[in-house]
Length: 286
Image (cartoon, rainbow, N blue to C red):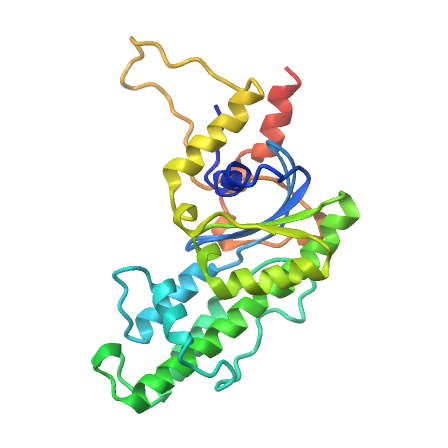
């Protein structure tokens, strides 16, 4: 059975929200990737936007490290907690790609500008841990965290806003699904909930405890395909040890919408194979 790690992220929403029906818009926000998809049915997706360089989760993690935060429970949650103490307009970072009229994501520039700001301040996060910082030092770090988070989420909003318009022009969507590890961020959820309401959409997010549970996500993806009769027999018991396995670690999930065409560093090798959607169509016609 052909499964994909990205599709498994949003299928978990159909497990927790029985009212969710196709077609719907999907925003995947994780440590390694961002993706905007129009999900028309199981195995039929149109890619509206993707990661051009760094994903939002990676930007959160690296900024948290630069700020000297405790990463034992994840950089994203640590930065989100510190941002609650800060002024999100203390530092004026520019929102990425506002002049580019597509739905792709880029967080590398924002991450670099934050790093340069941290190095210009009279703080030494690599030497002084956040728990050892004095009040002034901690406040500066909190202001940086809050300012970074405000702009990072604004970038998500910009791309989602345009993606909703594109998706509505192609299908009668009623829901926005937000999934992936970063979907557990309360600020991300609240801002995207407001955006969905502006467009008359309901928003669906998996509970935070399932946002990073790969086992449940992959299993439910298998259930979705199994219910449609998409099954393969198990390999024979006498299968040779040197049998061929077609592994595709960077497999493009959907057909790319014309308005979203852009070369993404994270997807450079996906053109070696047809997309998962194209493969599903081929197998469905057999």
